[in-house]
Length: 163
Image (cartoon, rainbow, N blue to C red; front, side, top):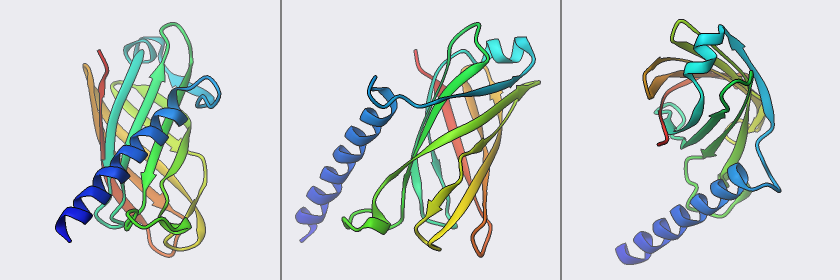
């Protein structure tokens, strides 16, 4: 029994990694470019590929984050892979979902942004997530808030610049 659960968890993790890699890095399905606001120096300091994770104790969701900003541009690309609670079962409400970052602003080391509205399987409703954090060198961390559901959900995120 334990071995079967362990194998299922491993296969799910491998599948999620494959899905996320396909969604965020293939030329066929690139993340859309979104506006990047802020001062030139703050935007320049954000240049590079950032990778990380997020989690919400309130919803039980976790996921991966990829954010990329090319030097000298004020447009960025970013995806978030949301893994709903109970994602080990292959049902439509428990399937991972790729979310899109729609706007990012960086000023004075503070990073703020918004996700495109998306369907929340827990409430069967449309929600929107905003995030805020602090960039220190090659690391960023912060919090996010999801509104639109019957209750407001919060969580934490962190990212590191990929070498």
